[in-house]
Length: 314
Image (cartoon, rainbow, N blue to C red):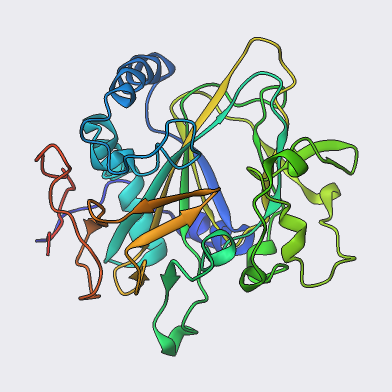
């Protein structure tokens, strides 16, 4: 099935993405639309009858992959404004393999500088494996980060160091020890920065290396805007220095259909919790899934089809 992509990247945008590792922000919803969506999604998240993972609510991963059961999020990850641009980056076959909410309440610490390639840093084994002819594990994922609320320097916006996606400064195979009490509010270069109970510096290839923060750019975003970036790009976020303004982001992660997702495992271990993949499945948002071992869902957990345009759901 062939369709005309309305939101293709221009040649300049493709060049900017290749050079910098990110592009955007782009507008997906108006602030008013985002406010209404946020209200409906917030209510839907409280209903866990169809949630993919039945785990303690206080767990960081309790609301992973809610695009698999919350209708508005099922539609969101398939939006043409997102998928059209991803096809220019990843090729015709595109899978959404994970999504998660990233809240930052008033007074919350910032998120430390990090990169991700195979995502084995917390789980202990690669969650993504690229074909051997492409490195067998090099490539990371494409993150689409949508602002559900305003993201400013005060509320804790994202920060990027342009161009750093071309070199990995961390070795994910080292693994990290989850210790939220020890790793909370750690002062790094004068800023309170942690990593959800981990110390990301434990993965550094060179223990004396430090990110060049003088090159960092702040990604200020309005509600309803999204930004596209490589997970291998050095990224972080500022603390929420306000006393009354929460910040909420929602990130959906995408890979080409030829990538193996969660190979050789039925569980995911992260952030002190373990979840079963029994109800999990990748979502084909463009083209086809090319890995027979990948779990694939054609409908969400409510039985609703994913509304991707011009997709062969196989």
